[in-house]
Length: 123
Image (cartoon, rainbow, N blue to C red; front, side, top):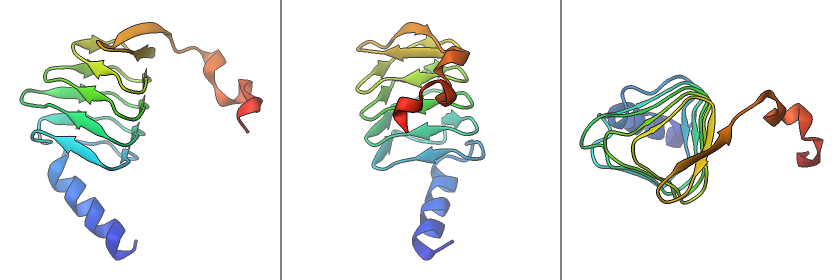
């Protein structure tokens, strides 16, 4: 690990002590506190991520959150979710959901057919 990666890891360890292995946050990121946010394993968030965590915010394992997403205090995103660009999450998003919008709403369930092996056009 180079010096920049070490420094980044140390900052994230302090800011987000309850984040799972393989959690990656593409900067810039913004938190009220950070310590009130729990991130699952294999989590990915794109840039301009904002979390207003004056009370507990929980995000499950294997989630992908697009850019410019805001998560409001008290929200919970289940495991295996995809949150679309520019969404504002308030409340609960159930496991294995594709959700987007302002306010963020569930559009459909994530299914096995969403796997990359079924979408060769992406390669």
